[in-house]
Image (cartoon, rainbow, N blue to C red; front, side):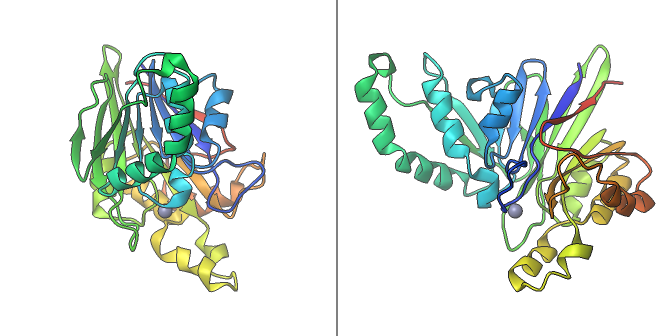
Length: 284
Ligand SMILES: [Zn+2]
Protein backbone atom coordinates (compact mmCIF):
# COMPACT_ATOMS: atom_id res chain seq x y z
CA UNK A 1 0.00 0.00 0.00
CA UNK A 2 1.25 3.47 -0.84
CA UNK A 3 1.69 6.29 1.61
CA UNK A 4 0.06 9.41 0.23
CA UNK A 5 1.28 12.83 1.24
CA UNK A 6 -1.22 15.67 0.85
CA UNK A 7 -0.03 19.22 1.43
CA UNK A 8 -3.22 20.53 3.04
CA UNK A 9 -1.76 23.91 3.88
CA UNK A 10 1.42 25.34 2.39
CA UNK A 11 1.20 28.76 4.02
CA UNK A 12 2.81 30.35 7.04
CA UNK A 13 1.71 32.72 9.82
CA UNK A 14 1.06 35.42 7.22
CA UNK A 15 -2.55 35.04 6.01
CA UNK A 16 -2.85 34.19 2.33
CA UNK A 17 -6.01 34.03 0.22
CA UNK A 18 -4.67 30.88 -1.44
CA UNK A 19 -2.57 29.04 1.09
CA UNK A 20 -3.96 27.52 4.26
CA UNK A 21 -1.82 27.30 7.37
CA UNK A 22 0.72 24.54 7.96
CA UNK A 23 -0.88 21.09 7.77
CA UNK A 24 0.03 17.86 6.00
CA UNK A 25 -1.93 14.64 5.71
CA UNK A 26 -0.20 11.25 5.56
CA UNK A 27 -2.62 8.56 4.42
CA UNK A 28 -2.39 4.77 4.09
CA UNK A 29 -5.73 3.36 3.05
CA UNK A 30 -8.25 4.32 5.72
CA UNK A 31 -5.61 5.58 8.11
CA UNK A 32 -5.17 9.35 8.00
CA UNK A 33 -2.57 11.12 10.11
CA UNK A 34 -2.80 14.89 10.31
CA UNK A 35 0.52 16.64 10.89
CA UNK A 36 -0.22 20.04 12.41
CA UNK A 37 -3.54 21.84 12.22
CA UNK A 38 -3.01 25.27 10.72
CA UNK A 39 -5.52 27.78 9.43
CA UNK A 40 -8.22 26.25 7.24
CA UNK A 41 -7.21 22.63 7.69
CA UNK A 42 -10.74 21.23 7.67
CA UNK A 43 -11.62 23.22 4.53
CA UNK A 44 -8.72 21.58 2.75
CA UNK A 45 -9.63 18.13 4.09
CA UNK A 46 -13.19 18.69 2.85
CA UNK A 47 -11.75 19.16 -0.64
CA UNK A 48 -10.43 15.60 -0.33
CA UNK A 49 -13.82 14.34 0.81
CA UNK A 50 -12.49 13.85 4.33
CA UNK A 51 -13.51 15.31 7.66
CA UNK A 52 -12.36 15.40 11.25
CA UNK A 53 -14.06 12.02 11.97
CA UNK A 54 -11.74 10.36 9.41
CA UNK A 55 -8.59 11.26 11.31
CA UNK A 56 -6.72 8.39 12.91
CA UNK A 57 -4.70 10.87 14.96
CA UNK A 58 -3.43 14.44 15.02
CA UNK A 59 0.33 14.81 15.42
CA UNK A 60 1.77 18.20 16.31
CA UNK A 61 5.39 19.01 15.48
CA UNK A 62 5.36 21.96 17.86
CA UNK A 63 3.09 24.46 19.52
CA UNK A 64 3.72 27.57 17.41
CA UNK A 65 0.34 29.16 16.82
CA UNK A 66 0.36 28.81 13.02
CA UNK A 67 0.66 25.02 13.40
CA UNK A 68 -2.27 24.70 15.82
CA UNK A 69 -4.60 27.55 14.79
CA UNK A 70 -7.43 25.23 13.86
CA UNK A 71 -6.89 22.47 16.39
CA UNK A 72 -9.98 23.78 18.16
CA UNK A 73 -11.93 23.30 14.92
CA UNK A 74 -10.68 19.72 14.58
CA UNK A 75 -11.67 18.97 18.19
CA UNK A 76 -15.15 20.46 17.95
CA UNK A 77 -15.96 19.22 14.47
CA UNK A 78 -14.80 15.70 15.31
CA UNK A 79 -17.23 15.78 18.21
CA UNK A 80 -20.30 17.22 16.47
CA UNK A 81 -19.91 15.19 13.27
CA UNK A 82 -19.85 11.82 15.03
CA UNK A 83 -22.80 10.05 16.58
CA UNK A 84 -21.18 8.00 19.27
CA UNK A 85 -18.23 8.66 21.54
CA UNK A 86 -15.27 9.00 19.15
CA UNK A 87 -12.07 9.66 21.05
CA UNK A 88 -9.46 11.86 19.38
CA UNK A 89 -5.78 11.13 19.83
CA UNK A 90 -3.47 14.15 19.76
CA UNK A 91 0.27 13.48 19.79
CA UNK A 92 2.74 16.27 20.39
CA UNK A 93 5.76 17.49 22.30
CA UNK A 94 5.70 18.12 26.03
CA UNK A 95 3.30 21.03 26.58
CA UNK A 96 0.62 19.63 24.27
CA UNK A 97 -1.58 18.50 27.17
CA UNK A 98 -1.62 22.01 28.60
CA UNK A 99 -2.49 23.58 25.24
CA UNK A 100 -5.30 21.06 24.63
CA UNK A 101 -6.64 21.62 28.15
CA UNK A 102 -6.78 25.37 27.48
CA UNK A 103 -8.46 24.91 24.11
CA UNK A 104 -11.09 22.68 25.68
CA UNK A 105 -11.54 25.22 28.48
CA UNK A 106 -12.18 27.93 25.88
CA UNK A 107 -14.81 25.69 24.31
CA UNK A 108 -16.70 25.13 27.55
CA UNK A 109 -19.60 27.51 26.73
CA UNK A 110 -20.01 25.89 23.30
CA UNK A 111 -19.87 22.38 24.77
CA UNK A 112 -22.57 23.39 27.24
CA UNK A 113 -24.82 24.85 24.52
CA UNK A 114 -24.57 21.73 22.38
CA UNK A 115 -25.04 19.18 25.16
CA UNK A 116 -28.09 21.13 26.38
CA UNK A 117 -29.58 21.50 22.89
CA UNK A 118 -28.93 18.12 21.28
CA UNK A 119 -30.37 15.16 23.12
CA UNK A 120 -28.24 12.76 21.11
CA UNK A 121 -25.07 14.38 22.45
CA UNK A 122 -26.10 13.18 25.90
CA UNK A 123 -22.95 11.09 26.15
CA UNK A 124 -21.07 14.35 26.48
CA UNK A 125 -17.92 15.81 24.99
CA UNK A 126 -15.49 13.70 22.99
CA UNK A 127 -12.63 12.06 24.83
CA UNK A 128 -9.25 13.49 23.89
CA UNK A 129 -6.20 11.32 24.47
CA UNK A 130 -3.09 13.44 24.52
CA UNK A 131 0.20 11.59 24.06
CA UNK A 132 3.25 13.71 24.81
CA UNK A 133 6.35 12.40 23.07
CA UNK A 134 10.06 13.11 22.92
CA UNK A 135 11.70 10.29 20.99
CA UNK A 136 10.99 6.75 19.84
CA UNK A 137 8.02 4.66 18.70
CA UNK A 138 4.46 5.91 19.12
CA UNK A 139 1.82 3.19 19.49
CA UNK A 140 -1.43 4.30 17.87
CA UNK A 141 -2.78 0.86 16.98
CA UNK A 142 -2.79 1.29 13.20
CA UNK A 143 -0.92 -0.49 10.44
CA UNK A 144 1.45 2.43 10.00
CA UNK A 145 4.45 2.37 12.33
CA UNK A 146 5.16 5.83 13.69
CA UNK A 147 8.11 7.21 15.54
CA UNK A 148 9.46 10.62 16.42
CA UNK A 149 12.71 12.37 17.18
CA UNK A 150 13.58 15.80 18.52
CA UNK A 151 14.18 18.60 16.03
CA UNK A 152 15.79 22.01 16.54
CA UNK A 153 13.51 25.05 16.26
CA UNK A 154 14.97 26.86 19.27
CA UNK A 155 14.02 28.96 21.06
CA UNK A 156 10.80 27.06 20.39
CA UNK A 157 11.32 23.92 22.47
CA UNK A 158 10.58 21.05 22.55
CA UNK A 159 9.81 20.22 18.91
CA UNK A 160 9.57 16.87 17.13
CA UNK A 161 9.51 15.36 13.66
CA UNK A 162 7.56 12.22 12.80
CA UNK A 163 8.31 9.20 10.64
CA UNK A 164 5.68 6.93 9.10
CA UNK A 165 6.58 3.44 7.88
CA UNK A 166 4.21 1.04 6.20
CA UNK A 167 5.09 -2.45 5.04
CA UNK A 168 3.03 -5.12 3.33
CA UNK A 169 3.47 -7.90 0.77
CA UNK A 170 4.36 -5.28 -1.87
CA UNK A 171 7.24 -3.83 0.11
CA UNK A 172 7.63 -0.85 2.37
CA UNK A 173 7.22 2.91 2.13
CA UNK A 174 8.30 5.61 4.54
CA UNK A 175 7.71 9.31 4.94
CA UNK A 176 9.20 11.80 7.37
CA UNK A 177 7.50 15.06 8.35
CA UNK A 178 10.15 17.40 9.67
CA UNK A 179 8.08 20.39 10.76
CA UNK A 180 9.99 23.62 11.43
CA UNK A 181 13.65 22.97 12.16
CA UNK A 182 17.21 23.79 11.29
CA UNK A 183 19.39 20.87 10.22
CA UNK A 184 20.00 18.67 13.26
CA UNK A 185 21.07 15.20 14.37
CA UNK A 186 17.55 14.25 15.47
CA UNK A 187 16.09 14.86 12.02
CA UNK A 188 19.08 13.18 10.38
CA UNK A 189 18.56 9.96 12.34
CA UNK A 190 14.78 10.03 11.85
CA UNK A 191 15.16 10.50 8.09
CA UNK A 192 17.87 7.90 7.52
CA UNK A 193 16.83 5.67 4.63
CA UNK A 194 13.29 7.05 4.34
CA UNK A 195 11.69 7.43 0.91
CA UNK A 196 10.27 10.94 1.27
CA UNK A 197 10.90 13.95 3.49
CA UNK A 198 8.35 16.73 3.91
CA UNK A 199 10.25 19.80 5.06
CA UNK A 200 9.14 23.35 5.86
CA UNK A 201 11.39 25.91 4.18
CA UNK A 202 11.99 29.63 4.03
CA UNK A 203 13.99 31.55 1.43
CA UNK A 204 16.80 32.93 3.56
CA UNK A 205 18.30 34.71 0.54
CA UNK A 206 15.12 36.81 0.38
CA UNK A 207 14.22 37.10 4.06
CA UNK A 208 17.69 38.34 5.06
CA UNK A 209 17.11 41.40 2.88
CA UNK A 210 13.76 42.34 4.38
CA UNK A 211 14.34 45.51 6.41
CA UNK A 212 12.26 44.35 9.34
CA UNK A 213 13.93 42.71 12.32
CA UNK A 214 10.89 40.66 13.30
CA UNK A 215 11.00 38.97 9.90
CA UNK A 216 14.77 38.52 10.05
CA UNK A 217 14.36 36.84 13.45
CA UNK A 218 12.86 33.84 11.62
CA UNK A 219 16.14 33.11 9.83
CA UNK A 220 17.80 31.33 12.72
CA UNK A 221 15.19 28.64 13.36
CA UNK A 222 14.10 27.54 9.90
CA UNK A 223 15.80 25.66 7.08
CA UNK A 224 16.38 27.11 3.63
CA UNK A 225 15.72 25.01 0.51
CA UNK A 226 19.49 24.45 0.36
CA UNK A 227 19.64 23.20 3.95
CA UNK A 228 16.59 20.96 3.54
CA UNK A 229 18.20 19.53 0.41
CA UNK A 230 21.41 18.81 2.32
CA UNK A 231 19.43 17.05 5.06
CA UNK A 232 17.64 14.96 2.43
CA UNK A 233 20.93 14.06 0.73
CA UNK A 234 22.58 12.98 3.99
CA UNK A 235 19.65 10.67 4.75
CA UNK A 236 19.47 9.12 1.30
CA UNK A 237 15.96 10.46 0.70
CA UNK A 238 14.49 9.95 -2.79
CA UNK A 239 11.76 12.59 -2.76
CA UNK A 240 12.00 15.92 -0.98
CA UNK A 241 8.72 17.77 -0.53
CA UNK A 242 8.78 21.46 0.28
CA UNK A 243 5.98 23.20 2.17
CA UNK A 244 5.42 26.30 4.38
CA UNK A 245 6.72 28.69 1.72
CA UNK A 246 8.08 31.95 3.07
CA UNK A 247 7.63 34.14 1.13
CA UNK A 248 4.69 32.47 -0.62
CA UNK A 249 5.31 30.94 -4.04
CA UNK A 250 2.84 32.62 -6.43
CA UNK A 251 -0.21 30.40 -6.75
CA UNK A 252 0.13 28.05 -9.69
CA UNK A 253 3.83 28.80 -9.92
CA UNK A 254 6.35 26.05 -10.54
CA UNK A 255 8.74 27.19 -7.82
CA UNK A 256 11.61 26.77 -10.26
CA UNK A 257 13.72 29.28 -8.33
CA UNK A 258 13.22 27.30 -5.10
CA UNK A 259 14.15 24.05 -6.83
CA UNK A 260 17.21 25.67 -8.42
CA UNK A 261 18.55 26.53 -4.97
CA UNK A 262 18.13 22.93 -3.80
CA UNK A 263 19.36 20.90 -6.77
CA UNK A 264 23.10 21.53 -6.28
CA UNK A 265 22.72 19.75 -2.93
CA UNK A 266 20.28 16.93 -3.74
CA UNK A 267 19.96 14.68 -6.76
CA UNK A 268 16.54 13.17 -5.99
CA UNK A 269 13.08 14.41 -6.90
CA UNK A 270 11.86 17.71 -5.46
CA UNK A 271 8.13 18.26 -5.11
CA UNK A 272 6.33 21.47 -4.26
CA UNK A 273 2.96 22.86 -5.14
CA UNK A 274 -0.18 24.59 -4.04
CA UNK A 275 -2.48 23.39 -1.29
CA UNK A 276 -3.79 19.86 -1.97
CA UNK A 277 -0.68 18.89 -3.94
CA UNK A 278 -0.25 15.13 -3.46
CA UNK A 279 2.79 12.90 -3.58
CA UNK A 280 2.39 9.14 -3.67
CA UNK A 281 5.13 7.07 -2.08
CA UNK A 282 4.83 3.55 -3.48
CA UNK A 283 6.17 0.49 -1.68
CA UNK A 284 9.23 -1.28 -2.96
ZN1 LIG B 1 7.42 27.11 14.07
